[in-house]
Image 1 (cartoon, rainbow, N blue to C red):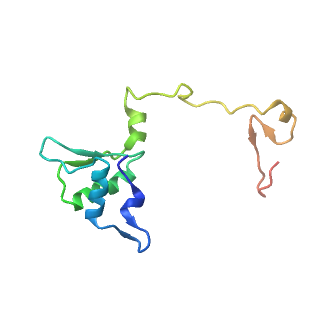
Image 2: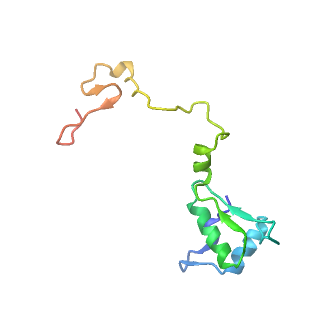
Image 3: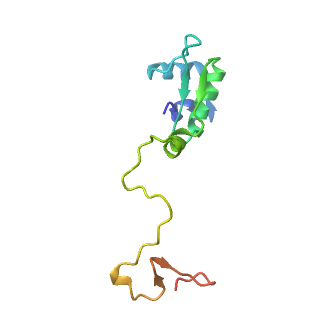
Length: 123
């Protein structure tokens, strides 16, 4: 992710840091203004909301050819056909787990769920 959240804000006064400071911080991380139309900077994060801030700042800096991957890694991992899948990932609905054997005869516990009454007390 290219978002360095704490570095964007002056928390003492609750304002965005001067753009020149942010640009220098990015340069230290290897994030630089595209030199020509064949170069681009694509900001991304886990879901797209943090990288949106970086994209806005790039536009305030006057950078061209900058983009935000709005869905982030979350969208990519859910929609890309070659996204790695965790071997424990389960596709589709699964039945609730059975209660542990030592709770099997406990009143109110059935199929791994606890029921509550209208008064909010667990039964």
